[in-house]
Length: 148
Image 1 (spheres, helix red, strand yellow):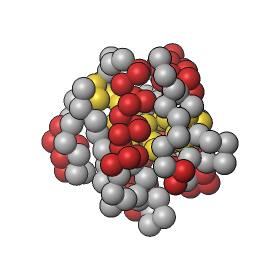
Image 2: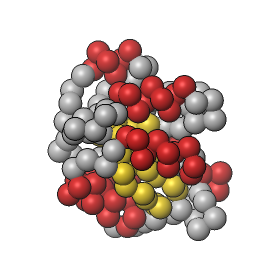
Image 3: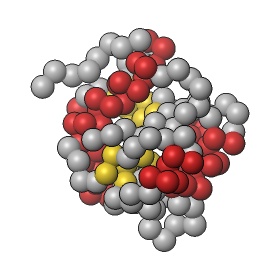
């Protein structure tokens, strides 16, 4: 499989990679996504809870956030995470891709989203969706929830 390399340098960090933060409490799923993304030349950091991920988003300003809505017993769930990111002026334009087993289309629509990427899905789909999102991104701060 060919690697996705060399989209607009606007989205690529100094190491030549798109910076992605994954917020996922299922470690095996997070590892699967991380491996897929790294094989496609993404720079990936994984966090198992919203609190530490939010601190990293503030510090690193990633190109994309991949977010699970259900974050186990953590104080901050995915919906809370989205609200907090979107309230911070310098972060609100970061695309958020929701990757979840939870199918709550009403709440997604209330946040401006159309569809969900429902688990389980092929991890290769995520790489393609991230590049499509970055290439088509209009920087209006929308939440992008890719369809299958």
